[in-house]
Length: 488
Image 1 (cartoon, rainbow, N blue to C red):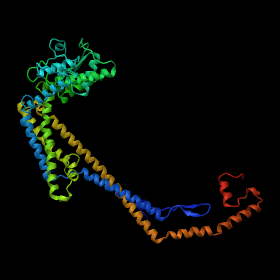
Image 2 (image 1 turned 90 degrees about the vertical axis):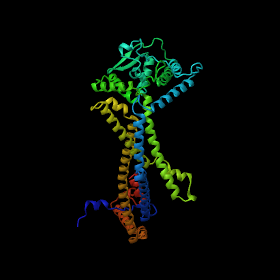
Image 3 (image 1 turned 180 degrees about the vertical axis):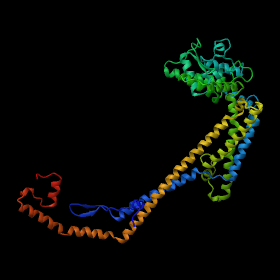
Image 4 (image 1 turned 60 degrees about the horizontal axis):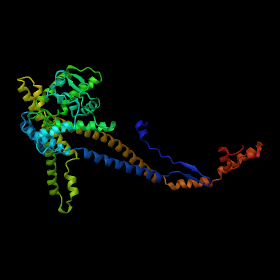
């Protein structure tokens, strides 16, 4: 019966190297040495298998029905908070709380920078102080300046259209560029427009490039803080800094224009919708309001996870074995896959409720057709972003688990081959004792058979009249000949 290719592949071959020294003959390896090597390899494979199995366990969530139920309930509750208390700009109950918080932070920042107006401890005074301290050349507001006719600027849109007022990396880039060149860059109607010599009184402080860059950054940051709660002349709530998600539409148009790519009608439409949403009060303050239910959802899920494990720990652990380190290992709600799965469920449930409410009210507002502005004003972008982070984590853990499982299969196959190899060595050791190998080499060394053959070759060389200095008479002569150390 012929051997299959697989059987030939699975065969192991043991090679025992035979060496010759000046004094004796010896095997360079023996069965015991090979067995030690194989057992060491088996130990290493077993350790890797244990590590991978442990990694799989850490990446696999251990949620039960109660965990999933608590996560879903948390998501539903926070969705109700978002629908009832957050809603949309201008109608939000929690909006007043975040507005007050930003006002206090603006005044705190002004105090740090040296504001000390004892006669007028008001927000407008603090903003005026910051505007004078962190001057920039791109603050045209469309009131009696060129921006009104050229850029269609007015107090309600200049923070949005001015790229230097965008709280993004691109906004920082244009802010510093405008300060170095005394220009103003605006996005309006799908166009990137630059105003040269924007402010004749502006001068960027600094003695070298590094100091000017630092001054430019501080001016950008300080001016953004001054505009978070509106300008010093604002009446009522004022127009704050636009939310980063809205300024993304400006960034796309600006980048396309700089790279000479055509700006599509879709880009213009989205940018116009973003501007209209901003004018309704969807600024960085309102987006901060949207983080409240998302943060509550996050904290509630981690709290539920810890409390359940805490109760279980005290029920199942003897008093003598209770310790803070073991308690924290069981209850910590941060780095394990179980709480991360619960957060995915909670934020997914939250987004489901929020998106459903936004769609319903968008259709109601549009009287049967979807009102896109109403939809996006009510859509909790922070919640959607947090859910996307959870989904990304789930995909990453799943991919990593699959890769580890493949590695485990390979290690198990290698371990099986090594096990078979060790079994074979043990069987050989039982059948063929290494002492017989030693007796064989000893007999070969003591045998004069090879000496008789060597003497015959010497006699043959003498009969053929080979010169005396060219005859190899012993093993040393042969070694020197092949090493090229003789004159033969």
